Image 1 (cartoon, rainbow, N blue to C red):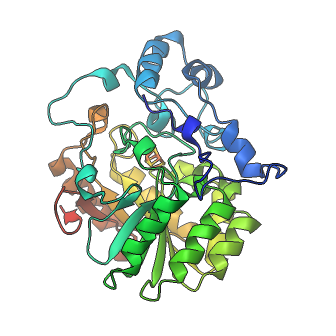
Image 2: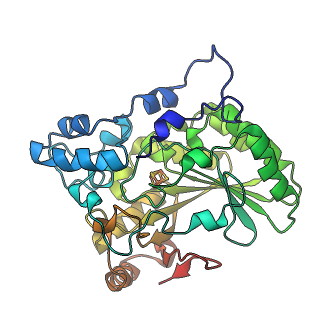
Length: 348
Ligand code: SF4
């Protein structure tokens, strides 16, 4: 069972350790600490009957429930098929052993030369800036990721940064996790300051779901360090359904754009969440209203416990063909699969 909450950036010598004992948590940190972590409470708050509890408990034992209030507020009460709830509610099916569904579907362990550093593609490296997420998505390909082995100390970070300093072919650093914005701003500013001192680095990319599930994360402190860096800034959000985008999310996106950030979105095609032309089209339209361009539509990575979300390739292609008929080209996400060992995402 992953207990990322307990690892939440508290290692004393980590750049992710906030050493100011008197500092007060910001609004987003309070919301993060109060996220629902009990499957009973999740079912109770949404008015689900008791038949959902055994599955919720069994799945929670594999990968803990975590749902912030701001995300819960966008779910329909009494509807177990709500597309946002489906992403976070554990089901009995997570315990099924399905052939082909594995612990590390992208074989990331093969591409982790140092703790917290993943180097899969030419020109860019991925840094695990935080072991925590604000929300635990049931289909997550890193639901079994060994975060405890990838929460570097400050000295280990320096060695990872040396890898970037010594390789002039690397032009982009990608902060990932967990969710990189689950780290506090002091820690992130420390890291970004070092990254921008590397002359051949041009871009800073963040893969995050936090501005979606806790829009208050986009506060002045975050915009301070992000807006100030010389690096070109790209934030790739993770939104799967139009219902996730409320006015607070639009405001958070507006603030990021005002700080010079290019906003993209990647989604996962999920059975029971967004597996229709209508749903995907509404998502693209709503993303654009928020100032975000659709980037990737991923097919599911075959991670153990998530097989019930799968949409077969043929159906995925038909959905995108249907999308092409109703959307302008710039709102059409690229349908891709991540294949371990490939030099880029594989178009379907
Ligand atoms: S926010 Fe991203 S990394 Fe975290 S659980 Fe969801 S999909 Fe996985």
